[in-house]
Amino acid sequence: ATRIGVLALQGAVSEHVHALENSGSQVSLVKNIGDLEGLDGLVLPGGESTMMRRMMDRYGLFEAVKQFAAEKPVFGTCAGLILMAKQIEGRKGPHLSLLDIDVKRNAFGRQVESFEADLAIKGISDHYTGVFIRAPYIKSAAANVDVLATYEGHIVACRQERFLCCAFHPELTSDPAMHRYFVQMVNESR
Ligand code: GLN
Image (cartoon, rainbow, N blue to C red; front, side, top):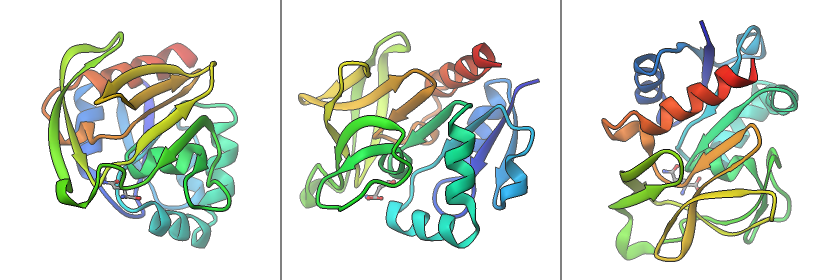
């Protein structure tokens, strides 16, 4: 069976584990470099991207995840999306620099810290409830990036080859469509 890891240093971990298991994958937690061994794909969860980066550095996972991503599929949600972006507004350098996107953190403003929105996600779902929590959005994406969903004119989900990301929290809805899609991506890449 497909084995997918969830980076488990900080943030929304257990809900991702359940959603991936319900989508037919074996799932394990990634807390150390050795935990990446034998995995076919990796999820970078929501949380706080600066803190998550600090923890990745501390456990040697930053370089290890970058190497993993050189070959295998990665799905970043919310803070995980920020970790994958090549450009982050107001920040000198990127983190993992995997996706040709330019992101803005906490982009929906303070007065709406969290909200739900009905989204159409290309190739995935016509009606998907996106749960946004201090969410980023994607200001721009390169031509080789497939935009999967927008909300109020801003890109909130996309795919570039083996990399998938969304600004919302798919693990906080009961709809398995996003996780199923990623499991399928991983299956196809094996
Ligand atoms: N605002 C967070 C960040 O910048 C992301 C929010 C989330 O993951 N829910 O990392």
